[in-house]
Length: 201
Image (cartoon, rainbow, N blue to C red):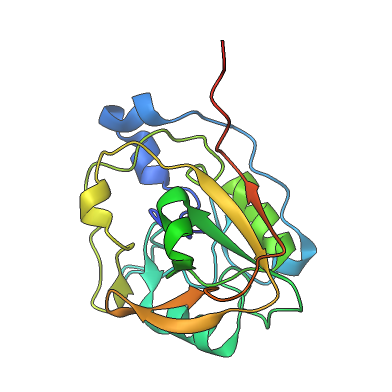
């Protein structure tokens, strides 16, 4: 969490929050959520769990908002959770933007329900505590992958997010990258995370 997409999978981006030009887009929550025991094996940054697919720069900094390309593909192909890195169970969750739903696929790996719940609490993008995407591109190492269509989203308003509950998915190639698809199967449920019905006068 995207993913953790960028943020595309995005948990927090502390550098973005410190940039005065971006502060108007940040709705701060000073208290990080409690870390579940199932995620205690992962490193942390700023009180937040670093997802298993989050890359680390050559300088040692975890780069929220990008993904480790090899780990992302391994997670999709081997049915590993994108947050904890462990095998998925009989139920799984895809965190998807509104624009992903008609295509029924996402490049973000699936998550355990508990890992998805933590991501929603911890990630300001998925949890609705940011109203715009970051306006500057990430500086990536060669092994890192920017979020899908990130260039088109620089500075754009954040899309609503949804949790799509499934029993399984198929791995496809979408726009040149591996993705999880549920075309041809019926989700157990699709729950809005940040989308709300418009107010009717």
